[in-house]
Every structure is written in C-alpha cells, then in structure tokens.
Image (cartoon, rainbow, N blue to C red; front, top):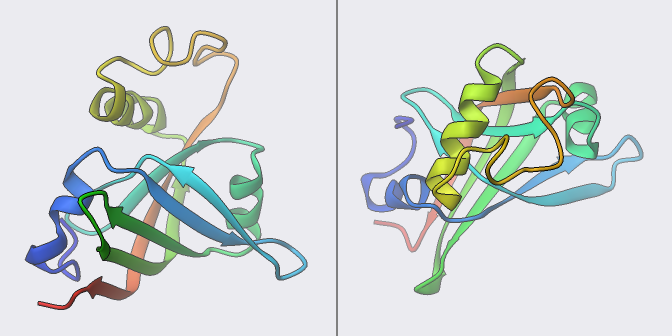
Length: 139
C-alpha cells in the first residue's frame, strides 16, 4: 500500500469501494468518473479503455484526484491527489480482471463485460503517484 496512505484509511483502498476519479478536460473543466481502484506499495491504480475521456484527459494532463467515501460513514473519506507516472497497456488486462474479481466476483472479459474482448478493447492501467493525501477524519 502506498506509504502516504494512513493506516487508518488503507481499508478504503482494499475494500471493493467505488472511487470518483477527477481529471482535467482540455478546456480546464474538471471531469469525474466512477471507477474501480486498488493500490500497490507505490501507486494508486485505476484502469480504463483507450480512447475514453479520462484516458484522453490523462494523456494530455497527468494530474488526477481519486476520492473514496466510506459507505458506512460519508464523513470518513480518502482523497488522493497525484500524478500519473505511468499509463501502460502491459499488465492492464490482468489488472482489469483482478479489479473485476474484487468488485464483481467475476473476470472482466467474458464475465462482467460480455460485449467486448481483450482483442476488441485496449485496456490501460494508470499508476498514480500520490502528491497529497487527505484522510478525513484525520488520525
């Protein structure tokens, strides 16, 4: 888990809780999307299909915010502001499958997503390096 995430709020990244990701449109307008999220030792990670708006936005401007609310207490939340250090297709299908299992109990292609396959959709994994973390309430 990323070292900047306080232990008191790491569960929000470990549980299958939906996150809101905010990127910046070319005209400066914020754009938000509900996503699946996880983290490793260095990064908060999200996944998208190539060509979607958040993909275009992140390629143009790597600044991003990830917000997760505790569904048991909306006044307990985690905000991670950061920069996409890597947007990669390598491992992205495995990553979306792992996220899909975490959130739905089934693989992404052929399970949750029955309309497309790994051959018809290019997945991208975004590795976000946190630059500012707010955990509310603070510990």
